[in-house]
Length: 396
Image (cartoon, rainbow, N blue to C red):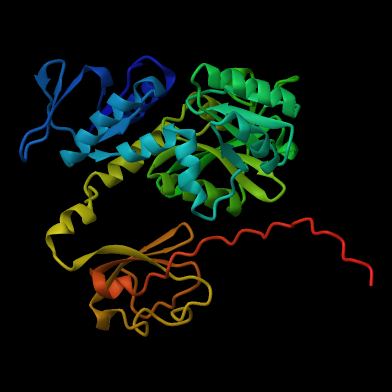
């Protein structure tokens, strides 16, 4: 396998370990500076130039895109995708994860634990927003912050209002987030590769510091996650469109709560903590995938009028629960089940005798008109009725 590692820091620990792991396994690996590419777009011939020369062929790309070059970096990854080169993380996944608000918005649609979060611009909305997340103390986060920079704990509402007003006056976008008191100074970093958590560590803040980032002086300890944390980490990475990710979670009373999904997680801290060969696991995963590049089915099938690909959900109480795929009648409607997703388990080309369960998701190809009738109408969450102060009744 010929592997391109996109990185502007060829001598940093993570990049060096990835190159070393690839070469140890007999692969060819080259570090390419993301900013030295030129992107050529032409009819039927997307191409890339590197340092003004036409780029040679690569089997796979591992993006290590820094936050400061997200726009150009994801454009380069997107061009590799158009050239049918396997990319360990998609351009859309990197873009989604890099924006804290966007990533939380995407995750909020799914059954993933999240700290209660709000985003406001108008000064009048700040106080109601703080109250909605549970009141002070609250966490205030810059949307573009990394490594704990731009994360502030406000002990009182007045302090929170002052901080938000100051940051907004400098044109900074900020999130207001519930402070999970039971997890103060601690979080979990789960390292996801493919559909598995291959390593995990707990990060613990030191002294009065509430941020547990290693760059803030936090210490680490290896941890064995239970199934709930593993499933949450893998699902979060999958939802974001990332195959290699660091998922940061708080240990809440109600279970794991995802804070962030990192598309370029560092290797030094978790390899030193767990003594595991994380770089090797990443390279092994990529090598196993290069022979089966993903195809954008939705894009390819636009020429098939009346046919397409969609995901059908089987909710609790559905008429399909308890039936086999054969008994569901899908085949008779010219609908073929390509893949069944059950939790974090992926079942490709499922047998027609397999019984459907609540929560199953079916990736199907078939007649769009037939599949449209199977998708339930969108339902909005009912708001709680407001309690109004009514005048006391007149005495009889």
